Amino acid sequence: MYNRNVREGDPRSKTKEKTMDKEIRKIIDRAYEGLELTKAECIALLSVGDASEEAFAIRGAASGIIRARNGNAGYLFGQIGIACAPCEANCSFCSFAEDHTRFGTMHMDAETVIQKTKEFTYNGDLYGLYLMAMHKYDLEHFLESVKLAGQNLNGSTLMFSNVGDTSYEDFVEMKTAGISGVYHCWRLGEGTDTRIDPEQRKQTMLNAKKAGLEVLDALEPIAPEHTPEQMAEHILFSRELETFQCGAMKRISVPGTPFEGKPEISPFTLSKIIAAQVLTFASMKRMPIMAVHEPNIMGYMAGANMVCAESGVNPRDIASDTKENRGWDIGRCRELLKESGYEHIMLGNGTKIEI
Image (cartoon, rainbow, N blue to C red; front, top):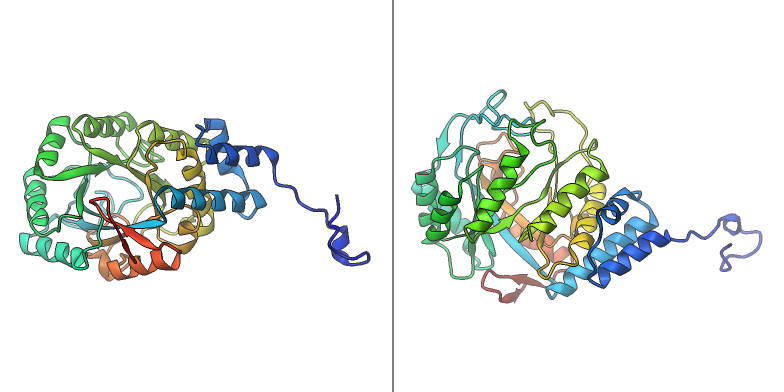
């Protein structure tokens, strides 16, 4: 079939009209209808070319679905890295790994926890605050930091933990202290690029759910060698867990790590992956909040709706305070949501305010 809108003799008259793959169109329609996509359908979404007509249709559908589900509202999060040490998990992509870290042992003092909490919450529009510790961490220091942060939050901000493998009993203590959920991932390359048993990671996520905490995770750290089949397995695991927040994070080539100088996936590729996740999650009664790391406008035009400001130590950075290097502040995060077309910011108490 030829394009009837170009004149005879025009070079474009020899260009056939492209017709979007019928199977991808069918999958998109099923997502719109709220039907549960299969693993094969998730793989098909992830397998289309980044610049294909199908990929742009997937991005557009994902953005439309997630904006319709929450009234075109975005989410602002903040994260404070409150502790670090040379880590025995030895993740090849992490700046804390004991084989190559530049960091010593640090536990953030009370004054700094309070100061950084106030920096994130001064405007009253922070949905959630993460407190991040290590794979092996000091529970007493963590709970004291939770107490200090909680005393300086308003009633519309929730607290979340970002910690290593943890028992059910310790998660119960966190919930009692005021934590609403825990960020924890079964990561791509777990047990190969890390020393951690993948089943141990999964069990920690189940421990959190058993303790009454929300589970927040992500598809991470994504790199060029990861296949659609591998990614789909992780995406469906997140759906099965009914994750509260998900998203996609690329692997950063952190200086000093074994992956320094290695290729990274582009924001363009990352946006397609985000979109495939959203369509796969569209059957869930509660659509997860969706993040993209590193933050970029293409991701937010393809289904991401959450951006996280970062302060303190960070596993994707070698600076002692990531806000002085790669971490974003709240103002920059808010502006990105606005530039991406979000009209409201969702608060932790379920209300919305205009950006």
